[in-house]
Structure formats: structure tokens, C-alpha cells
Amino acid sequence: MKQLIQRYSSTSLILRIVIGIIVGVILALLVPQATGIGMLGTLFVGALKAIAPVLVAVLVASSLCQGRTGLDRRFGLVVFLYVFSTYLASFTAVIMSFLFPQKIALSAELVAEETTAAPSGLGDVISTLLSNIIANPVSSVANANYLGILFWAVVVGLALKKFAAPTTQTVLQNLSDAITEIVRWIINLAPFGICGLVFSAVSESGLDIFTTYGRLLLLLVGTMLLVALVVNPLLVFLVLRRNPYPLVLRCIRESGFTAFFTRSSAANIPVNMELCEKLKLDRDMYSVSIPLGSTINMDGASVTITIMTLATAYTLGIDVSLPTAMVLSFLSALAACGASGVTGGSLLLIPMACSLFGISDSISMQVVGVGFIIGVIQDSMETAVNSSADAIFTATAEYAQWKKTGKSLPRFLGGEAETDI
Image (cartoon, rainbow, N blue to C red; front, side):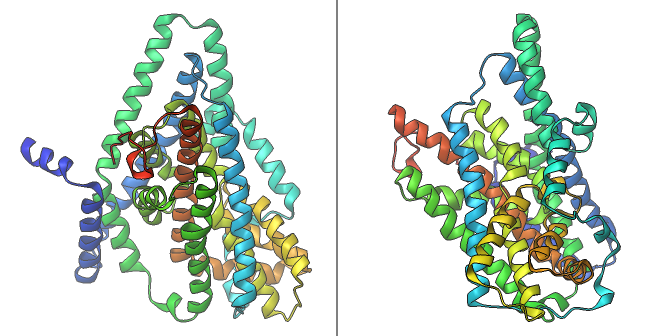
């Protein structure tokens, strides 16, 4: 048994995940009634979601307590890349919608019960974000409120830095190392979890989404791929002046691939942190930037909000001018940054964007219903783009600092430094 475990662990994680996907599809086709297989996916995502808030809180508090804040110019660059890329994603969605306008078949039956909690305006989104920042620290950890976790972890870490004895610092460091090791154990079981997730998706979801809403879904997925494979690499190139694709494709493979199946940015935080460790990034830096990115780096969400809103306008025969579309792209980018603070994510922010064109809530809520129908693909792609970009831009800011200080870049970027990938 020990040899079997060692052989399993030494095999490439990506290869194991691919095998898990294949097995999941085969089992879904042969024994779709075996619901227990799908439980593997539920347990895997649940474990990642459970450990991620604790991991973030302990890592940030431990780093600040020991005087290694890591929040220098790199952090400012990361935040800029997060926000600017989200706007560029929305702008790209506007261009794609102008080139390939889509219409939606609206029906009153599409209104889902869970869509009643949509925000009425941008003010609601900003209010929610500010409330999340100062939320109770215990409830923040319990509810995976990462803005609140970051805020209180910074406060506690700075306080401990002033008063903590050396033994306390050692305990925090040991606790941080232990939780990081637990994360590695969970990620090592990813093939089983993804097998269960694929089984559930194939056995439960029909093919209607590829026919009734196929063109709309194709526009959404195509735009997100354009952002992931063209827009984001261009930003990386402008910062590093190196071929961006080795870094971009590695992050998509290691992070986006997992995020596509978990459909949860929160669940993918430990995966991104593990990736940053392999890339030899500063732990004090990525322990803050990765969870922050899961909140404000929302390229995929801004694409969804923009395209769905413009499709609604085209359906109703509303003439959309280019200046109005530019205002929409800005509004969508701001709204996307608050998507994680609203139950239902980006879809529930569509009514707010639709209000820019005077579209009533009754119509926009039907569009949200359509979003839930195609969500099995749309949300997977959105999460993959969002989460992989967190790692991409964190690494970009770190490597930019390496260049400035004369430190050699990793070999895959033309330098001499080694990485674990």
C-alpha cells in the first residue's frame, strides 16, 4: 500500500486529473444512477472551501507577525493588473458583442427563485463590499468572506508583531506550515474529486444548453478565451518584456484547469497558493494577493455581465451607441469586482447593468434565468479565467521586481532560476 501511494504521488498531477476526467465520463455513461461517485466531487470542493479561509488567515497573520509584510511596490502592481485587466475584459466583450450581436429568447418561466436577491445598483455592491471588510472575523472565516479575512488578519498580524514573544511567532509559523501541508494533501486527491465532479455534470446535465443557447454560449466562451490567451498575455508582455505564454499556459494548466471543474474561486485559492510556491514566489506576497484576486480580479465575470446585458438590449431592439457601450464596460468592470460579495456571483449583477439602458427588472431577471441554464459551462469558464489570472498577475509582479533588482528570472522566461514546474 505504501508503494502504491508513493507511485500515485510521484505521477504528474495533470496526468492523474486527465485520467480522473476520463473515468468520470465513462462511469457517468455506464452507471449514471451511482450518485455516490458524485459525492467525491462534493467532498473535494468542500474540503478546499473549508481549508482556504483558515489558510489565508494564518498565512497573512503569521507573515505580518514576523515582520515580513511583502506589501511593497509589487503589491501595487498586482492590484493595478487585477483592476485594469478586468476593465480590458469588459472592453473586449463590448467589441465582440458589436461584431457578433446575439439575441435571447425570453420567457417568464425562466425566472429562478434565487434571483430575487439581485442588487438594485452599484451603490448596493459597494456597500456590500465595505460591509464585508469589517464583518465579524469569526463569521468571515466561516462564510469565506476574504475581504473580511484579509482585513482582520492584517490587524491581528500587526498587533502580534508588536506584542508577540518569539515563541508565539514560532507557533504561528509552525501552524502556517502545518495548514500548508494539509492543503497539499487535499490537492493530491484532486483526481478523485474531479472524477466525481465530471460524473455529476455528465449524468445530470443534458445537451439542450448547446442547442437553444449555443451561439450565446459560444460568444461567452470565445470572448473569455480571447481574454485568457490574448489580452492577459499582452499585459504580462508589457510588464516583463518577455514571451508571456510559458507563464500564462502553465498557470492555466495548473490553476485554470482545476478551477474549471470546481467552479469556485474560493476553492481554488489553495491550488493557486500551491502554484505560487512552485513558481518560487514570495509567500508573504502571494498569501495576500491570491485571496484578494479572488475578490477583485474578475475578468470572466465582467465578460459575462457585458455580453448578457448587450444581448438583452439587442433582443429588445435598443440601439446601443459606442459611448454608451464604453460606459457599460466601465460599469461592468466595477460591478465584477463586487461579484464575489453578492450571492449568485456575476449573474445577479446583470440587472444592475441592464438598468443603464432602462431595461426593467422583470426582463433582466429572465436574462439571469438564462444565465443559470447555461451556467454549467459559462460559470466553469468564468472561474477558470478569473482564478488562473490571479496566479498570472501575482507572478508577473514578482518577476518584474526580480528584473529590477537584477535577480535571474525562471528558465521558462529566459532566465536561469529554477522552479518546481
